[in-house]
Amino acid sequence: MPVITKITQQKKDSERYNIFLDEKYAFSVDEAILVKFGLTKGMTLEDWSIDDMVYEDEIRKAFNRALHYLGFRMRSEHEVKKKLLDVGFGEAVVREAMVKLRNLGFLNDETFSEALLQTQKNASSKGPRAIRQELQKKGIGKELQAQVLESYSEDEQLQIATKLAEKAANANRTIAPAQLKQKIQNALLRKGYSFDIIKQALEGIDFDREEDEWAGITDSVGEKAWRRYSSKFSGRNLNNRVKQAMYQKGIPFDRIDAFIAKKENEEDGD
Image (cartoon, rainbow, N blue to C red):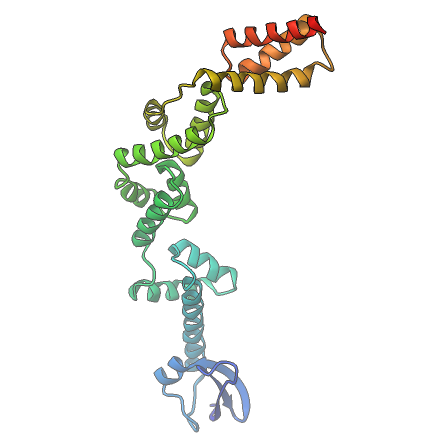
């Protein structure tokens, strides 16, 4: 049976030791493995015990790699497992490392999911549907998803959605109300809010425009459409193209007709 003839500390990693058997380098182990197996110079090793040490050391390396990965931010069990498998650790080693991480409190999908909910809700103003998708991406099961999202009340959803809608409405006064409503609805849908919450949020927003605001919106949209189509069309075809473009931007028919009449008068004057 091989005998340990030398044990040296690695220069690049002071917590790892090189084991020499019969004057030849055999393997390296973490300091914890060295202590656990009581490895000393002159000790005789059997093949099965070497295999056990190497296996334990792999688990230790996977555990340490996971701790480093977790040091940047919280992770789900799925993320950590995938990372360890991707860097080359075997299934059995990863499974053992995950057990240690759980037992020591480094991995907890419930705590992780609750933290993700708070971050997505408070920092990104996301609704439950978008957060559910994020949880699913992180490998969180449907039952835990539902359990965590129960704490996201409809009142809180409405409060956040309304705040987003108000911000968008105030920042886009140069857009016609109908178009702005659609724009906000689409944005809130992408954020993960339900149609019911979005409807309630929009009901609390004042989309009314003063006459001078309407005049500015109508002229801006109309002039842009007129410049776009006047080089290609004329007469009724031009008018119809401009009307369609303005209507799609949420301009009421009476204002569209007034704008067209103004442009026709300008051309007649020329």
